[in-house]
Length: 157
Image 1 (cartoon, rainbow, N blue to C red):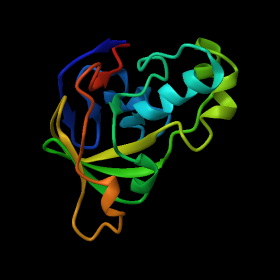
Image 2 (image 1 turned 90 degrees about the horizontal axis):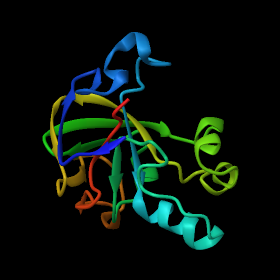
Image 3 (image 1 turned 180 degrees about the vertical axis):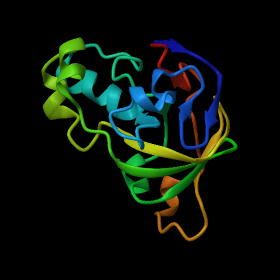
Image 4 (image 1 turned 30 degrees about the horizontal axis):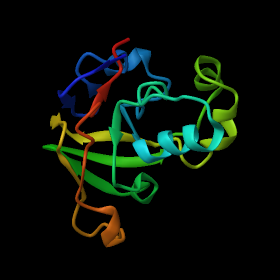
């Protein structure tokens, strides 16, 4: 896992360099990109006393100031890429194996968002995450930048 500042999102495939860009490596054709809120990662450490760094959940993009659950079933613009939120990215046994069993319970409903790439583009640290018009999402979930550090994260597997 390595932090990067800019990545290309490829339409209906994934992020350039990610193993899931190869469709045969994906558990499902829609497993293209994942996002997680830094606030939930920090809350886990605060509530459990167990250190968890932003790369440990192994999501592609770490965000701040945006409630990702609101984007399930909605389209969102991240940088110049257009994504569609498909489902919550719930914690799995592999996440627990690589970190701590407590993540399974804590991250239920807070494990991030799985999305497909409707239209490719460049995603960079600091880009705004915004719903597309006609997406019925509360005003306080919009226009929140990606975290500048560690920022956009890419699975370097």
